[in-house]
Amino acid sequence: MRSSKSKVLHEIAGAPLVAYPIVAAQSLGAAPVVAVLGHQIAQVSQVLQGRFGAGAITVVEQAEQKGTGHAVALGLAALASFDGLVLILYGDVPLLTAAKLQAMVLQAEATRGLVMLTAKVADPSGYGRIVRDAAAKVTSIIEDRDANAEQKQINEVNAGIYAAPAAFLRQATAALVPQNAQGELYLTDIVPQAAATIGVTTVDVSAEEMGGINDRAQLVQAEAVMRARLTAHWLGHATIRSPQTVSIDADVVIEPDAEIEAGVSLRGKTHIGAGARIGQGSVLVDTIVGAGTEILPYSVSTKTRIGTNCRIGPFAHLRPDSELGNDVHVGNFVETKKTKIGRGSKANHLSYLGDTIIGERVNVGAGTITCNYNGFEKQQTIIEDGAFIGSDTQLVAPVRVGQNAIVAAGATITQEVPAGALAITRVAQTHLAGYSARLAARYADRAKTAAEKGKPRAPDTE
Image (tube, rainbow, N blue to C red; front, top):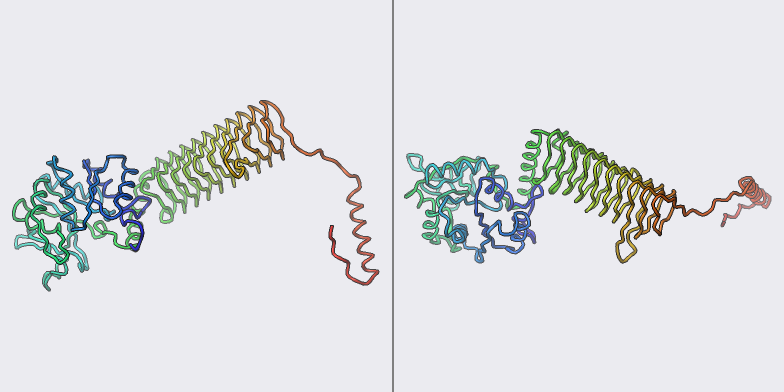
């Protein structure tokens, strides 16, 4: 991958590669799940704990990279008391489906033998070939570099995914010996052992599904496949317009009758409620959208909870830790950050609301700013139920506006506004009668004087 990050931590559709086989295995009821890790074990373990919970995944370290057979033997050591079927997966094969794994498990339960995935490919170069006898039974796997001319013509290849009884795997991996210059133990060498004892059967898989990720080109190709799958899944009950332009992450949930317009990006653990509508070009990250809410085009929301029947945008920006109650309106070019807005409140135009608690039925006028940062620390603004904030108001935190209070347009509020009061901070308005005529006459006199002197008029400095 030519990266400072472990390959299995690279993401497709918002989830690390290593998460996909674990989720697929858990969906079948696999337990316990053992992850045999080597490179960047601390970082990978942390990610696994964050996604699946502390203790959900048993981590085993492969300190020396001595091959796949060695890795499986280490994993089996963590399953000393386990006597069922073991499913062997790889952390860089994200497109393998739970349905295909289920077919393997059912076949292994029925035969009590070794079941392996194989695929028929147009170009088998680089793959281990499946060698069968005259009765079409699998006898071994021959690696590409060891295959003779006839064996190289075999187009059935090994996917490297196995299911077998734990007891057989313990015996088979213990019997492995290195047969290569690297001194590695190859898992493929258990196949002849199984063929001679418990038997080997295969389950067909597509080349696409078995594909591993070895470089960034394969990473983005796999992501395209995964995103197409996710979009097709949610099209089962939601309307997704121009689906080829929509991006949906693996952890996203979309409830029935939602509508997703063109160019929308749903990332992280975003949850779209029933009947919600997400407008064109909007980007939602780890955002919960309540039922019936409409997100108008080109709005951005991150780590935000939005209630039911809200109206957001267009061009709204909801930053982390914002929480909007039901029936809230946040309009064009309004930005929130760490702000709670109560039921039925509105901030429809050109406002910044940071570190703010807004009650119910509050109207926030256009151009309102909560001045929440003094250069050293953040301070909070509180606006109680029913208050009215006039346009172009600056609320200098920490400050409170009481229930049903009114703040006149153009005010700078630095002190608490009592409940029911009107706050005005304007300079008194004065009028100078006839001023416009006098101003015009002054400039006319200057122009006349300059012309009489025959030279350009000096530029104004006033």
